[in-house]
Length: 202
Image (cartoon, rainbow, N blue to C red; front, top):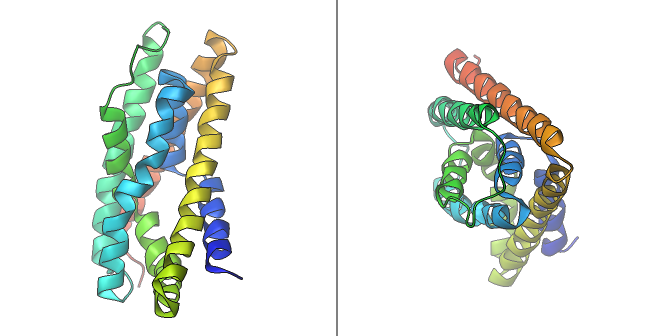
């Protein structure tokens, strides 16, 4: 299998896996519309490089203490985003503003960077594959990253487009989907905090 194909399969799998980032994309699509939310699907290109660099430099699994800290910090971030989404249910629905709030992008960067799943993925799966591809040559490493992010970003863009289309079905549908995305964020945040508080198992 070529490095590009390896990256494509892993990127598609990551995009299809439900998580707090996907729930946030759904909430933003309903609030701001699909077109204004599409830039947010580029967030992994901003938040992942520090994670990849740290994992490759360490050349080891991410320490359990760091994962626990990320779970606690990430859980708090997800709960904050959940309350923001659910608070919007109390306000009357309105047409999207002329421009999307720029903070939505950076909120997603913070959400993705504090998501322990990203650190685990690059430590256990993506990092070793990328390191092996780099040993075969920079072109192979570049092909792996190109395949991964093409399908990760493409899959998330498809989610945004689908959610934006459903949001146009009417106010009741939009409120229902907003509630679902907010409750999903709430569940992810509570689960992440619980894992961080319980600590690593012996």
